[in-house]
Length: 483
Ligand code: GLN
Image (cartoon, rainbow, N blue to C red; front, side):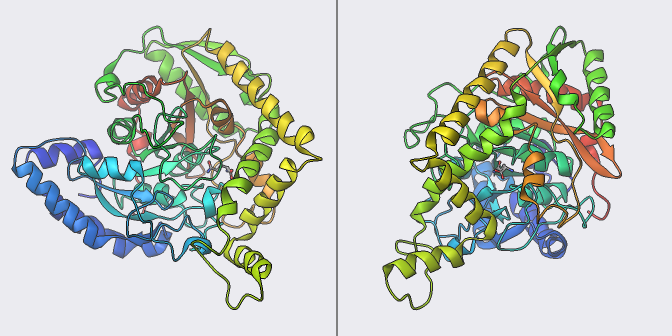
């Protein structure tokens, strides 16, 4: 049962081949047996899962249907779940039980999805390796000595290891697409504003966006359908109708104009990944796509700009964790200042502290113009590059990451080395554009992803292209050995 995709599960449930309770029990047993190897869950919610599964079976028995009705999923542990620990991967929130459900959680529950648990993640979603979690590193099911990517490494590892078919995740600078690439999954970062951020613990509010991680584009379409839509509780959510993503998967790629930025194939890219990307381009050409070389001239400035803007917003967002209102509080504070300092010093890990300091510095009176304002100007240039590219092409294609998953610990003492790995993903967040990563082959037994970017609100186009590609390739169907 554990090899089934969301789409297959939906058919099996509709045909009464099995019940949601049976499926949920099977997957919970599988998690208990295999998760100790990869550490992809922070919390399991067995009781909730079984009661949701039972309710979904009853709804089906009463004639209801729906692709998510009775489907098992998990949530990245930064989506608030009422009465359940929502830790954000941090000691700071280890004792925090959210008093309400995030909009994404509530919407998926209403559609009948079954929550198996909360997945591991980099602390406060800061990272690309899932090594900064207070609950320990997550391991890549493709090679347990390698990282699964981050920050949504728990969601990715769990889905890749067939512990469940799909999970929610978030992407501030690549945290859906990069772990998807590292674990042979399909992951979609929607347009900024497509999915509500209400109840999603903020890292960098102008960049954060929730989205689906699954094995196929078809499943991403199903999960995104349940997540997307206007939310009056999120002032940045967009009041635009949500298309039927599953219905849009079958479109032909005849005449689709694919732009390939020349800057993507620079010295930093592993040549074996470059070759796989060229193979996927050929595959799409066979399906009727037309390839055009384009240029994104300001791409080289994106990493420094992102690593000013994201920490700046984080320094502001994370000021609420002060040891007073909720979360961790140090023992026996001597006075108020000691309470703040030690609660934050003991509650936050080193990467989070580094970002708060960088961000507070960039926003401080003497440095705001030199760093923060400059970074915002670069952000606009990056966006303008995309706007002119999309005058000529329908999607942009390239690698998701310059290298495959690195070894655990290989970059943990060199934060800048890890930041550089985000080169292909962060531009979409700076511009607010949708992006998708899908499996494109293997290097040394480790998965490689190809990234597709589209104009605003063209998630459907990304899913359509990825689905057509997946009908003609089998990379995404391969499971890691041992899982
Ligand atoms: N690696 C990037 C960072 O650490 C992106 C993380 C994310 O998308 N949440 O900021």
